[in-house]
Structures are given as structure tokens and as C-alpha cells.
Image 1 (cartoon, helix red, strand yellow):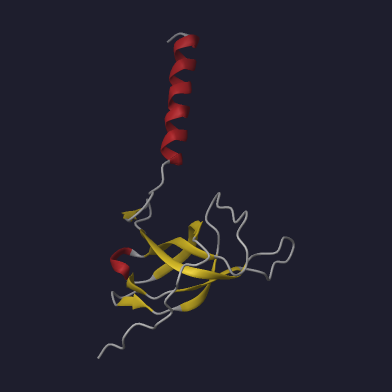
Image 2 (tube, rainbow, N blue to C red):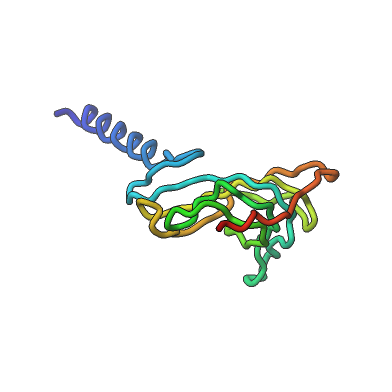
Amino acid sequence: MSIALWRACCSAALVLCIVVAGCKPSSGSSATADDAVIVNYTVRGQVVEVPVEGDIKSEFRVRHEAIPEYRQAGGKLGMNTMTMPFRLGEGMSLAGVEVGDKVALTFAVEYDPGFAKLRTYYAVKVEELPTDTSLDFTPLPKSE
């Protein structure tokens, strides 16, 4: 095999590896290489805290509305309204987001196969809502 052909094959293989490594699920439910199930949820809420640069104790925290379709570990549905901290997903920016802003927050939840255990969760997208948006922090009805 000539050196030019060898270099071309190696270059093509390298590009293919980079492309495959860069592919990630974009929304909904999907499986990762280690069989985790990733589900994205979008909820409306109000920003309670934004991280302060240099302060490792500060967090991104949002008080959010109830999420009836949220799947808990073990299969039970529903998450009540609450204030939660969110780690930021890769490449996510909070530029322009301030305490008090009303937002639509999309976050990813990674579960073990069969939804047996929640592995982690993190924010993947934040969109500001109009300031006159009415939020409903009514808890979910209690299940019997």
C-alpha cells in the first residue's frame, strides 16, 4: 500500500471517529453506549439562583411547576413543584439569565435500563419567557 493511500485511509478513519464521538441524542428518550436511558423534560419556572463565578457553592436553581409526565426511578409518574439545583450540560450558557426570570427549562435525566435508578440530571436549555407569564405552582393531586 502506498504512503499516500495509507494516509488517506487513516485520515478517513480519524474523521469517522470524530463524527461518531460527536453524535448525541437531541431530545426525547434514547439509549447511550452504556445502556443508560436519557429522557428530556421541559418545564416552566422561575430562576431562584444563578452561579456566581468563583463561588463553588453557588448554583443554578429554578422553582418549577409540577411535571405530571416525569418518570421517577421505579416507574412512578409525576414530580411536584419544587426548587431544584441544576448542573449545566456541556456547552450550556446562562448568559443574560438573572434571578427572577421566568424560563422554560429543558433538562435531561439519565436512568439505568428499565428506569430502575436515576443516575444524574442536568440542564440542557433555558429560554426566557415573557415577564407577564403566569406560572402555576399548584402541587400534583395526591395519588391514592
